[in-house]
Length: 470
Ligand code: SF4
Image (cartoon, rainbow, N blue to C red):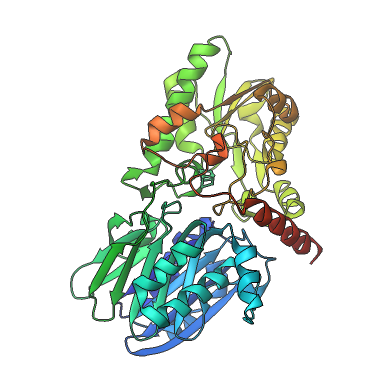
C-alpha cells in the first residue's frame, strides 16, 4: 500500500511532512522518508527503517527544513525489503514517492537494463523515477507523465519534487490508488497532496478535491498551478480502501469512510435477519479497530448488546502488513487479548473487516473458544477475496487467499466458526456508490491489462523468498 504526502509553500516543510507521515502511518510501517528542498533548490533526504516517530528526531526535521518536499511511508509490495528500496527515490534533480504496483515492472526493467542502465534496488518505484526523470529532461512535466502512463501498467499514485522548480502529483489512468489535493489559505498559503484527507487536515490544508484518474498537477515554487488529465480511462478506485485500508476519519471521492463502514454493519444485520433470524446472538464484538463502526451499527440494527471483547496490544503493528507469513504468525500471538467476562458462556458474533489469508480469523475463533465462548459467529465486512490484487495490496498470488477456489462453507470449516457470514459484493458496491469501482479481488474483473501479471506474481514470490531467508 504506502502513504505519500507532498507540500509546497511552507515555512517548515519537513515538519509538516513529518506530521503528515504520522497520520498516514497505518498505510505502511516498514520504512519512512522525507525529501525537502528550499525554494531555489538544495535537496536534503533522510530515510530509515520503521515508524516515522522512531526515524526522525527534532534535529533531523530542523536540518531538513525546506519550502517544499515529499514524504513516504513504506509498505512492501515489491522488492526484498532492504534499505535500497526506501523512498523517496531521487536522482538529484527529480525525487518521487509512490503508492501502488507496476505490473509490467520485470519486463520493463530488463528491457531498460539491456540498454546499459543500472538499477540500485528491486523496487518498481526506482523504475518509475528512471522513466519519469529521463522524459522530464527531454520534454517537461506533462510529457514525462504521458511517458509513465503509456509505458507502465498498474495502479499508482505519485508525488514528486523537482529541485528549485516545484512539486507534482499524478495518478494512473484508472485512478486506482487514492490521492487528494489540499490548499491552505492565509499568510502561510500553500498546497499539499496526500493519500488520505486526514493527513491534509491535520496540517491545516482543506481538502480541495481528489485528483481525477490520469490527472497530473504541477505546483511551481511561485505557487502557480498547472493541471490536466493526460491519459484517462475508466475510473476504478480501489473499494478495499473504504473497508480496510483508509483511516476511518478520511473522506475518499467525497464519501466518508466512516459512513461506508456504518453502512456495512447495517447491511450485514439485514442479511442475518433475513437468513438466520434464530441465530441466538448474545453479544456483538469487533476485531479492533477497523471493524468497530460496522460492529456498532450491526449491533444497533440487530438490537443485540455491543461489547469490547478483544483488546488490541497497541504496540504491535497491523498483522496484515507484516512483510512475511512467518513474522505475521508470531505477531498474532501477542496482538489480541480477550476479555473473558464478555465472552464466557455466550454466543459471540465477532465482526472483522476482511478475511485474506485466514490466519487471523482462525486464531480469533480459537481464542474466543479458549476463553469460554459457547458459539462463535464470524462476520466479514468484505466479501470473499478470491482473486489476487496487482495494484499495491500485498496479496499478489491467489494461492495465499483462503477463499480462492472455495465455497463459503469450505472457508467456514477451515476457520472453525459456527457460522461465517460475508458481506455481499452487490450491497458493498451500492453502499460505496461509485460506478466502475475496482472490485477485481472479488470478481476477477481487472481495470487494466493483465498481460504481464504472471511475471509480476512470480517476481513477488521470489522476492518474498529472499525476504524470509534474509
Ligand atoms: S483488486 Fe481489490 S484490493 Fe486491489 S485495487 Fe482492486 S479492489 Fe483494491
